[in-house]
Image (tube, rainbow, N blue to C red; front, side):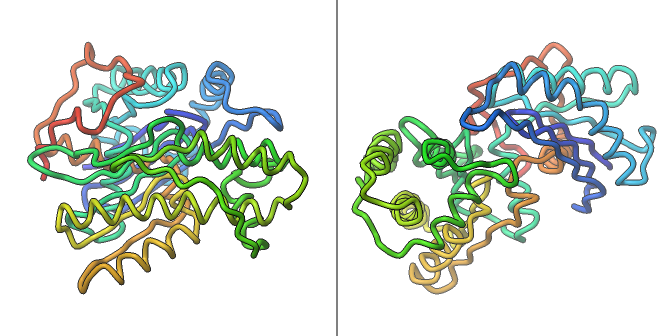
Length: 333
């Protein structure tokens, strides 16, 4: 089978095409860029998606050298995400399904990250650190569902980095803000103490962001050292709760996924933790093109769900901004 997937949950608009062997034929993406100093505006991002969705679908077909008749399944992101953005992908998927007569599958965005990571990383049953601009969760499979063992209590880690970068006057025109912060952090060497906030298995970033911004505004510290200190602190928090989940579940694999998963420092810290945790613990990170939101991951999850007997009625294709991974019954594992 060949599945076409549409991802439109936030600023990324992606269309991917993949078959049931895991071969990716196309993975096309365009990104909405807000004005400098601004975050994502849902209506403006959805207007961007509406403008380019037909072009991205066309480009995916061209990249794959496939025709619409060769597609067996249409998959799309049901949630979580920004409502106006999600609706663009849902409408496009419904339109493709109705005009082609091909079945339609609505999928959960975080689980799509997990499943493409399992596929690409050759993993069976990992503890997953899912980190992005919109989500921060530690996820692992248990008793028929993907359980959330820990998560952010306020803002996601990607949002923390993005807002700090904007407060510092950095530009994300040429590359994602997270990468800009990573480059700045590589220049830093002086660690500045920053609050370390873990509550049980959950983490909190809003106070850390406020504190670091105040340090920046004081004029006593440079952006490189603050970026370095911020990264080291929040990544250490994430590694700690991931290791706790690893110890609790007694699993032997660790996966990091989501947009922030492309950060090399975070991957190095997780790799070191996995190596020191115990013999046989395997760590995998993804390259940026599959770590960042993309259509291929949506296509892949839709495909394995469909082959496991899942079906989505047209009446069940409304989007859900708060669609949690633990809401999904996992019958394909």
